[in-house]
Image (tube, rainbow, N blue to C red):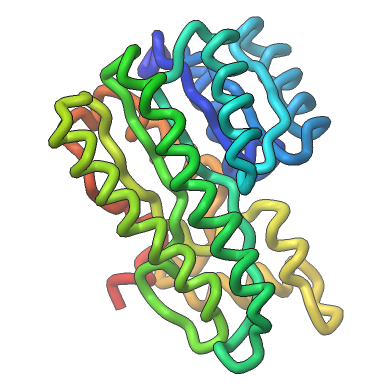
Length: 257
């Protein structure tokens, strides 16, 4: 207990999945957390669940991560509620599209907007708050698909690869400025979150989908939300104080093949 006591974390995509699990994990280990999501009711529900176990640890705020103005407002709100921000978890993201020929341009642009533009905006506007409460840590959700391409993932591959290198650029910028803010990316593979519900197709039951996905993973299983939340906890904590500009793979061995 207490691995991130005194930390103040802002988490996007906090209404479910990895954002919700990481919010609970960070609060359990002593941090204050603000959960941001376009689904305001969902983010509030998760904050309420956290506060039921760890009273006073969680806040929530509405945020469309593609809106520059909403980023400014949400960060100001979180800074006020937590009396500072020193952890930014850019987690919100979407999939979409297929091959380069089959993906329409509107879908391609939308995936970049939600997955990459949001990380740019989050880093740009959170850093000034984080400098005042350093040391700080920026954690950006990329994907194993940001390192390994698929023939039918043109938009998602491009977006998550962008998050990967943007994280490194931010790391070098903060280091050069002497900000004491680190920036790293995490790269999960298939994780058992609600996003899998949207992947079911051709009447394939979720259990069958999970089994099919697990066959692609050397460890033979897909990940659980806490597998990622523990990585977020490490990167948010001062235990990772010498780690910046790096990528943490949470892929069950896929990238080793």
